[in-house]
Length: 394
Image 1: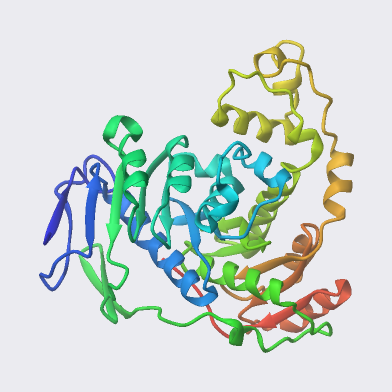
Image 2: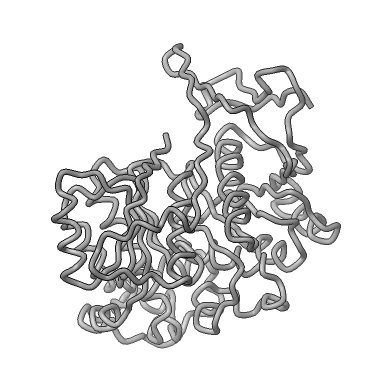
């Protein structure tokens, strides 16, 4: 296939639209079902790079959930405990523990379920039956993977009345070293960002605490590779083999940190027993449960607990999850890793990160206030590595 005609570009008025290879060669993809659009392909090709790179560095199956050219999360295939399975609404999936790829997808899709609604999925490995079974029941636009088992492909082709977007990509495809884009009729050219992110990038630990365990290095690598394919400015919190909070596309670094930290807090709070035991009506679907949980945790909990509304969602009226209870629960969390795509200009980012359990940080360094940032880390015993590498993505 030399080119693929699209219904329209970013918006319905932007016609004509198509994808093609600049050198006239064959596209490195097969469209097995559906008709992906312009934004679908932007998500597909960015997300595929992320999971391919993560698999290459960590040697583990990886999955990501993408929305509007940024990941809501990315994860590798580590097993989930029972609480996390329940929080991700996948405690009823048979065979989950035997499929690392399915575990990776369960983590990625379950991290920020509000943002992942209608996502694009990328898998580093051939999609199996367990992973396809989970995908089928979620609201999603499409998937890209290096292959699909016959059973998985049949399951996915039945999604959305046979119109679900399924893309197979050549896992051995290597893009040109030079890339181009146009803005306002003007062509930009640059070398591809082929910088390798691995443990060597974490060797320059500049804080008094020099100890970064292997599990934290893994999580820092996950956060940094995620940031490489996230719209900048961006910050990423990660723990236990997955990104748990991504703050993307903010003009201010502290706003990135606050946004990502708030998402990380919600991910933790979803695993609190009060949330796990919410007595939802059996007729309430997963997207509606996501919305209810989000409101239940927020300052507007009366919108789902009030006298006039709670019966729409629950069989029994739940007790409020007070701010004091939430703060106490979050105060006990430690061991979270944090990556930033550019330097932290002020110590306020560290103060906010600490409140979400951050113990390890990787950022480029190079600010005139680096010493202030280091001193703030030292105040809380946080270990921070200067990577020396900015990871902007636009």
